Length: 143
Image (cartoon, rainbow, N blue to C red; front, side, top):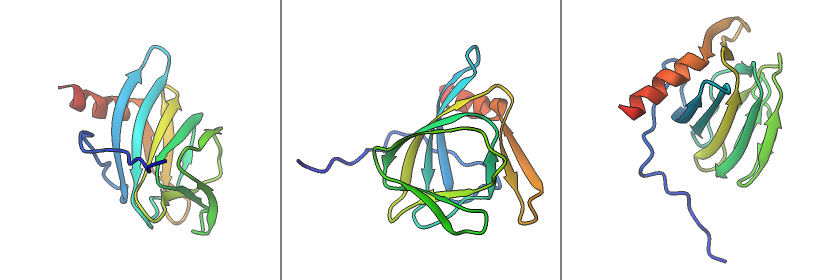
């Protein structure tokens, strides 16, 4: 069977200020049901900011390996292409990144308020990402 490659040429990637090594494309915001669908692209062999998930996230790795790291940078888990994962909210912070190539992961994020907290190296909340932040990025794509 031939290897198929996910074609991202028509995706309009955006960045979030203060979050290096990550691009995203908000595909849909369903405010009535509190569900946001987002494609995240994690840079190869890099780690994004330390953060924690405040709401339920369901993910599907579309390309590459989605890697999760402990707060201290040690590898915690590798989610290969094709892996579907259900992740409950947690107070445990972590980092995420791509494997040998950029990883593209489809996220279904459930919630209407605060979704993620980015943390500094002292574990203080540096930024909170809310549903309306993703809605604003979605609106830009729809214009």
